[in-house]
Length: 180
Image 1 (cartoon, rainbow, N blue to C red):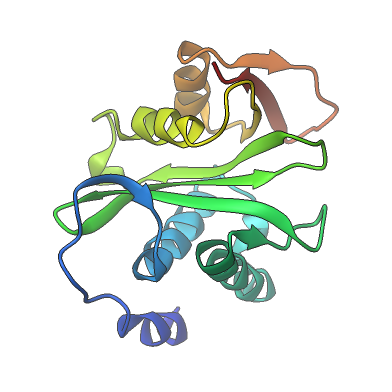
Image 2: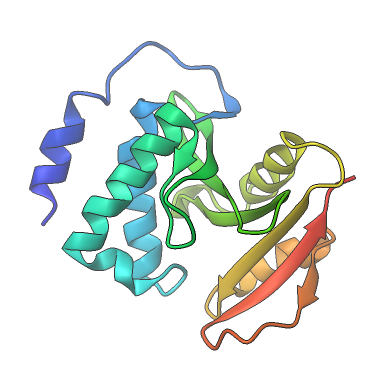
């Protein structure tokens, strides 16, 4: 189905041995991030809009500009600060987190986060959240909007200190956290 995408990214898969653990995403990770987003959208964890071809082209652009330039065009702004991180095991990404700046000064959104199905329940999600938050100054406010099927993520974030925030959104629940 995504042969054009696989061909486009296949030349970027091989590369030097990478260190294990949490690290900023590189262009070697964009295929993993893209495919993870599509898989989680298919299960209701992310917007189903990501399954539309036009949205996928925009998503690829967002992933690339986030990795290369640290900015990302969003529905809120033509340019928002953006950071992508991955956890690497055996030279392969197994999870990612994506943080974007919101329209409120100093506030960040834990925009997307996913862990490969075969690497879940190993603390990788918790590592992604805690290490991502640690990359920002103390007292940074983070929000996370979760779709209903994301109950495991919801429970993890609550255990990590996130608090529920009132929201008018019908399809998502919102949590908030201020870093120490």
